[in-house]
Length: 460
Image 1 (cartoon, one colour):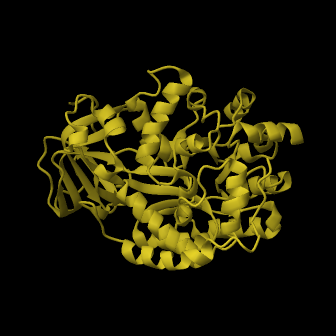
Image 2 (tube, one colour):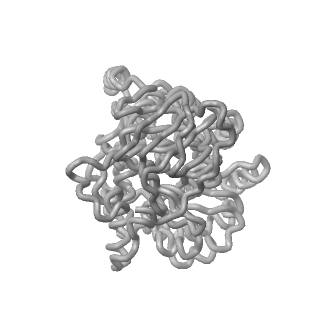
Image 3 (cartoon, one colour):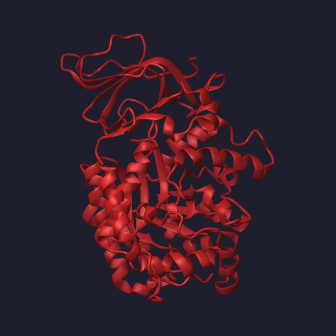
C-alpha cells in the first residue's frame, strides 16, 4: 500500500559494501508535507550510522550485515521525551496516592537515599526496557547523571540528558547542572546531547531560573524542566505569585531559550499567547498514563499546542509514577485521551499519533533535523515491528494497527546509529539478570524511610 513518496537517491558509493542493509520491509515515511505514509517491499541502506537510501525496485548493495525484514514494518525509533530512567528502581513503591503524598511521604524520602550505584543500576535496567520497547532515544532529568551518561555510552542508546537541581541546593546545584551539560555535550560519539535542568518553577526560584536562562543563551544549551504539571500547580502559582508557571517562565527568560516543558496539563488559556510569542524553541512532553493514575482533571492541551505549531513529544515520565517506560502505550493513550478530552473521534487520528511518536518527538528534544524520519541523511535510529501476531491480524488500516493493536513487545529489532542493539528480541548490550540481582540486593537500604529525610518539599 503505497501512499507516500520515498526518496530513492542512489547510493553514494556502490563499490564498497554498506554497513547494514534491511530488505523487504514496509517502511514508515514522511512526505514533503510531513504526512505519514508507507512504502512496501522497501530497502534501507545504512553507512557509518546514517541512512543512505530508502527505496524500492533496486538491487540492494552488498553489506557487512543484512536483515531480511519481510513481514515487518520499519519505523523511526521512538523517543521518550521526558523520563527519569533511574526511577525504575521505585516502580510500584508509591501506589494509589495523591500527588503531594506521593512526593512527600514516599518518593522524596527514598530519593534522599540514592547513591550513584543505585542510579547506574536503575539506568541500566531502564535502558534495557526502553530498547526492548523500541525506544532509541530518551530525555532524562535526574540526579547523579554522570552515571546515566556512562550507561548510555556503554549500551548504545541515544539520550538527551540534564542534571536536575533545586534552589534549596544553593548556587552549587545550578553550577553542577551547567558543568554536567558542558562535560557531556556530544558524548558517546555524538549520541548524547545535554540540557540545563532546573527541576520546576515551584522548586527553583525566579533568580535561579533567570540565571539558568542566561547560562543557556551564553553556552548554546537548551533547558528541560517540569512546568504547569497540573491545574493545582497553576492555581497555587497564581495565588502565591500572581503568575502562572508559564508566565514565570516568560518573565524569567526561560521562554527565550530552547525549552522542553514536561507535562503541561496545567497550561491555561492565558498561557497560550505567551507560548506562541516565545522567541525560543518551545516544546512539550506529554505522559498521559501518569495523569490518569494521579486523577488529574486535565491533560496536556495537545490540540491547542498543535494550533500554535508547538511540537508535543510522547513521554512516560519515571516508572515510579507510570510503572513502565512503554512509549508505545503513551502513543495509544495520547490518541485515546485526546479523543475523550476534545469529544472528537477524529482527533487524534492514528496517523497523527504516529507523527507525534516519530518526527514531533524528535523535534521536541531539538533533534528533528537528524531523527524522527527514515530519510537519507538522517541517523539510522529505527525499529522493526512484527505484525504477524494474532492481535494484529488482519491489517485493514496499517496506522491503526500500529497505534491501537500492536504492542511494544512486537518490536523485533532495535537499531541505534546503525548499530543493532536488539536482534529478534535479544538484547545485545545489557545483562539484565545481573542488574536485577544487584539492584534487588540494594533495595532494602534504598527504600528505608525511617530517617525522616526528604530531598525536597512538595507544597504547591
